[in-house]
Structure formats: structure tokens, C-alpha cells
Length: 359
Image (cartoon, rainbow, N blue to C red; front, side, top):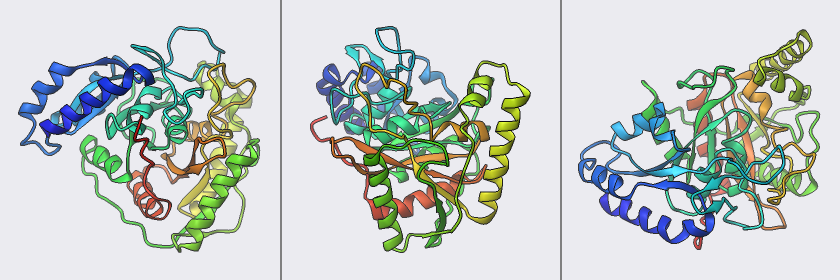
């Protein structure tokens, strides 16, 4: 795949000065790796890694050992003006922008990874997700994003909230990632229709009408196509913000532990009766670079960082402002293969990730 690496590097050189997805691009190193990777399973597949230290991550080392070629490190939030909930990245050329609308953030913290995939600079990039850091940028940039079950892959996060993940142009590529970074991975094709609960707000979140409409329409298409069978009954969680913040600070209290345990019981009961939960990924479209104000983009994602469930973002469509929105898929702990099987079946109905041809 020497040609694939050259094409990737050329597209990065052309588009990244404007999109600012990369902090570093490794031209010569990538070319050297591509020359020796052709006989390995990934045959020189170019990929990007999250952050400057990303090439040393467990997942990146596994991909490289299988013949993948890391072409550069992608942006994460960095120094600069903004709000405390700054979610854009800081690339080598400046602030990372959303490839669909330059005046909007791509989300974070796997900002550059999502932009690199959405703009076709690579087809696959590593990420990590401690509150929605893979799923939110995947949703806002219109690509597939997977956060793995807590503990499935090594993570440097001592709180247990962050799990490694992947951003990819398709579910098949995400499965290729998981096949190469885990031992003994076996695909689990979905049997249709998949029983699922659809929760528009998890019982507490305020979701904007435009996002609610896109995700509701996507679920309707899945039902009409026979891919999903909705199961009666809500999924009403307690707002996990206080519990997540306490765990991240290393200062859980009896109150926050009770909140976390209550949500775990609700989710355990839900997955005992159905294998799949569907929700919007983020409650709003991507916000401007000035910041989100008082709205938490993580409202619908961080409950599953606390509970440890695998979760994914599947492109669901576009809001009227021209920005992508994502449908969140959540399954039981340790069922990453089943999650990807469901995602592939749903992707066939909703269509693949849209290609931002001009970056």
C-alpha cells in the first residue's frame, strides 16, 4: 500500500493547512514503513494517532506491528483562548476546524482524528474516550466512532473512565482495528431485526429539536427497513454529571456512588431484556469556536464511561445548518463484537459515512 500512504500524505499536505487536524506529519518515516509493510496483514494501511504520544499507545503499536503505517499525530485541545469546556484541537497550523463548517468545532478531545477521517486524509485514526471524546467528534464530523468496553484494552487513565477507541470511515474498518488490537476477536453478525430501546434523552438531557429530529428519523428508517424492532419501555437515568466529575477528581462521595450505582442497576436491567440501546450522541449540533456556553455536549455520553459499556457513534444525517449528527449505539459490557455487528447492519440502512470530498 505504498500508493495509499503517498495518497494520504499528499491529501494531508493539501488540506491540513486549513483544517489543522495534525500536530506532526511523518513523511519519511511513513514512506520507510510502507516499504516493509506490504507482506503484513494490514499491508501498509495508513492511519493517524491521537496526540503526540499516540504512536506509543497500545493500539498504535499493535496496528503498526500488523503492517499499518502511522502517518502523523492528530490534534487535541491545547493552550489558547476559549471556555473551560474548550473542545476543539490545536494543530500545527492553528485551531482545528470542522470540515463541514469551518466556523464550528469538530468536538473533542479526539478532534484531529475525527477531522482527518472525515476529510479523507486517512481512513482510520486512534482515539480515546473518557466522557465522549471519540463519540462526540465522530458525530459532529460524520464518521464512525467506537469507544471500547472499559478494560478491554490498556488505558493510562487511572480513574477507569477513559477507554481506547477508533474513528473510521466505516464499521468494517473499525472492526479491522479491533481484530488487530485484541486477541481472539471473532465477528458477531447481527440477526435482524435487532431488539432495541430508543431513548431520545436518557430521561434527563435537553436535546435540541434539530438533533432530536435527525436521530428520530434515523431510527424510523431502521425500523421501516426491518433492521431494528423497538422494545417498549424507557431508559431513564439520573444525570451522571456529578458522579462523573467526582470520579475524575478522585473524590467520589457516598451521594455520587449511590447515583452511579442506581444508573448501573437501570442499565443492567435494560440490557437483561434487550441487547441494544439507541440515543442521540450529543444534545446539540457542533457549536462555534467560542464555546458551548452552559450546554454539556457530554450529557448523553458520559454515563457509559461511568458504567463501562461499549458505545459507538453512527452517522445519522445532517441538521438544517449543514452539520452531521450521530446515533449512539450502546450494548452490554464486553459485547464489543456484537456492537460492531449491530452497527454494520444499521450502517447498511443509514449509509456509509459521508465523504467531505473537498475537505
